[in-house]
Structures are given as C-alpha cells and as structure tokens.
Amino acid sequence: ENIPHYHAITIALRRAKRYQCPVVLGSATPSLESYTRAKVGIYTLLEMKKRVNDQLPKVQLIDMKAELKAGYPLFSRTLTEKIQNRLASSEQIMILLNRRGYSTVLTCHNCGYTDQCPRCDIPLIYHKEQHLEKCHYCGYTKPFLHRCPTCHSEDISQFGMGTQKLEEEICKRFSARVLRMDVDTTSRKGSHEKMIRAFARHEYDILIGTQMIAKGLDFPNVTLVGILAADMSLYSNDYRAAERTFQLLTQAAGRAGRGKGRGEVVIQTYSPEHYSIEMAAAQDYEGFYAAEMEYRGLMGYPPVEQLLAVLMTGPDEKMLETAAKYLKEFAVRVDKKGVLQKIGPASPYVAKVSDMYRRALYLKGSDGRLLIEVKNRMEQYIEMNKGFQEMRIQFDFNPMNVF
View 1: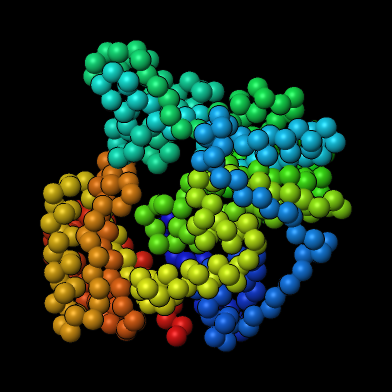
View 2 (view 1 turned 90 degrees about the vertical axis):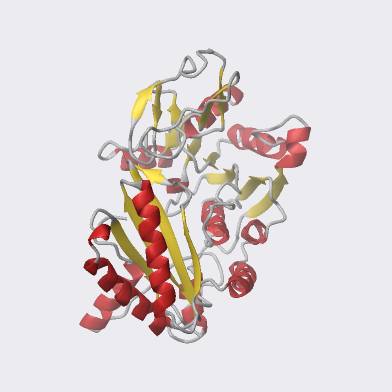
C-alpha cells in the first residue's frame, strides 16, 4: 500500500536470486499463483499432510437463514450452546467478526439520509466507546449523529455490527471475561503483545476480534472458534474474493484444538452452499484450488491469464474520467490485433478517498510480453501529456503466466 508499491513475494524472490539463497514460502492456504507454480515445478512443493497433534478441529456450517427465521439473528443455537459448555468447563473461545466499530451505517428513518464521510465515498462507522463516527479510509471523525441534517428528524437507526457491538452483546448473554482485539484496541505500542499474553494466561475466557486473530496465534486451551458473518467478504468486487474468504475461514478454524483436546469450529453464514465456504469447512485446500481454478479459467483471471491494472486518482472527477478514457483508447491502439480484453475504466468499490477520485482500467490476456509493452507505452504517453500531471497513475502488474 505504501510508496514504493511492491509485492513482497516478488521482492523476496529477486533478493534470493541476487544472493543465491533459497526462499521458503510457508502457508496453510497458499495463493493460487504460488500453488500453481509449485504444481508445475517452478517451485518445489513440500507438504505437511498432518497436524502436529494429528487431529483437525470438527467444523460445523450453520445456515443463518434458518436461524434468522427461528429468531436467532446473531448467535445460532448451536454456537450459543457450545459457548456455554466451554465456559462451564473452563475452556477458552475465540470469536471472529471481520469488521470493527459498533455499527456500520447510520440512517434516518424519516427521509433515508445516510451519514457518509465528506471526503470519501463511504458511510461513516459508529464507534460507541468514543461516541464518534469514523471513516476507516481517511481517518475523518465527527460526533455521533443525533439529528438528521436533512429533515431534522431524531429517528436515527443503526445497521450492521462491528466488534464493539459484538463485545457488548457477548457480555449481555454470557457470564464471561471478554477481550477484544482489533485496530482500535491495539493501537498503543505493546498493547497487542500484552493482550496475547493475558489471554494465554487465561485472564479472559473469550477473545473476539477481526482478521488479526485469525492466524499466527497458538492457545492450547482454545477448543472452540466461532466465525460470524463468514460470507462478509465473499461478494466484494475482487476476483480474489472467494480465495480470501477461504483463506480467512481456514486460518481462523486452525486456532481451535491446538492443545490436547479436539477443537470445534462453528461457521455462521448465509451462503453455506458456496464452494469456498464448503471447502473451508472441510479444510480441503486442494478441493478449493480445483474449483477456484475452474472459475479463473472461465473468466480469464490469474494465474490462468495475466492481468494489468491501471489505477488512477485525481482531485477532478471529470478530468479523471477523460484521462481514463484516453488511456483506454491508447491501449486499444497499442494492441493492434485486439488480443487483450479491456475492462473499464470504472470506479472501484470506494470511488473517492481523501477527496481524491479513483478509476481503474484492467487489461487481461495470455501474452505477458504484450501487457508489458502496453504498460511501457502508456508510461511514455503519460509523460508526454501534461494533462496527466495532476493525477497519480500506478500499474499493478501480475506477471504470473505459469502454463
């Protein structure tokens, strides 16, 4: 994310080549690109077929559509019962909800006004502890909305749930010592390590948090992991959405049963039939890889084909749209045979951040050399035209043609 932009694995491989040393890429859920390279022999594949204690946790999928009809919109009956049982037996629990804050949208019931960040194209998140609304993109804050600025109604409703509200609900429902780990609670230096040590000493019964608790933590006394809103990231506008969902669920499930007792995992979702969630529940990476590669092949996404993203930002929306249009037309001229697929230009999921508008143009194809040529010619074109000087344009190139 920070300048200079780079992919960490690419840099590691380049440095290793320079210094003639091996690189070990270790993961329970490797990226499709890395695993494909291992499958075709570019990487050496080393597998650990069994867990250290030789027992994977038992995973249950809960269809929250049925639970909602039965009057259990937050905690399913299964998860509620299992939490109570673990608390009674002095075992620890981890609950994952990958969204921080208290509520995610504030809306006026009278006129439908939604409180949004004035600098970004996204609703403000309510943080109850500070009694503030925050933008998680630019950091803008304002006092909590008590009265609608449009119709002056005080009938303001809160929708959605973050880790703050989850903590409050758990404290209401269960007699337990609850610890919350997210960006808001770990911002002070050393707070992250203090929380991990405190939970390891069993000073708390339940640890709730965002994705930061999903991997790398080893608590032998954790025998239950609950995952709420498991499909939250599944329908984002990113072709890697299913992959990222599978990785998060599988990694989070791996926190259960790392000691002597066998762990259990409860995954709550409104999309239990989706292959990424089914495969995560089965802890079947190869099954997910096969299903996702079939989808990537049909859609022409990496690692089957290659992708060049041209990401543009600027303070003037109309000028940005015009510049993006010119770049696409230029790409069409460079690609004389028309072998590349051009997608966009279009607005990303968040079209404006910190008063800077954003547009994206994607070029797809199997000819990596042509994509590189288009990128190089585009850079020359941008340097020659003064209209691009007020904009920031970056190229995210995925040269992962492994077939």
